[in-house]
Image (cartoon, rainbow, N blue to C red; front, side, top):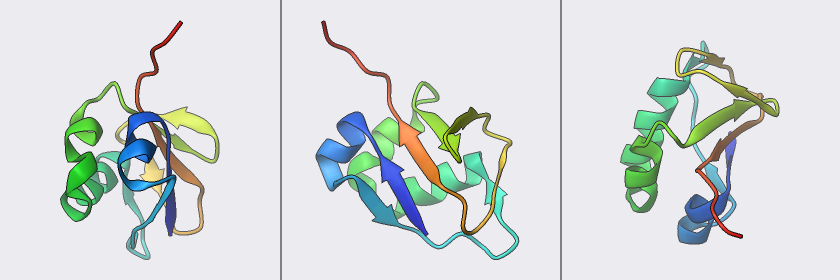
Length: 81
């Protein structure tokens, strides 16, 4: 499935990455760890819990379940003026 990335995540590897979620799904925490291992340039930012996960455009907790076919995005803290 496509995982959408924003902010400095997107700056490092692009706005989307492909990642295989198990057929029975996984938690956001499991997805975060798997994605960090699969895409090392974003591992440090993904490891920060301030980088929020969204499923179907709603922010969710680490224990939320991700199923194949859902829209998933990771959004790091934004700064600027």
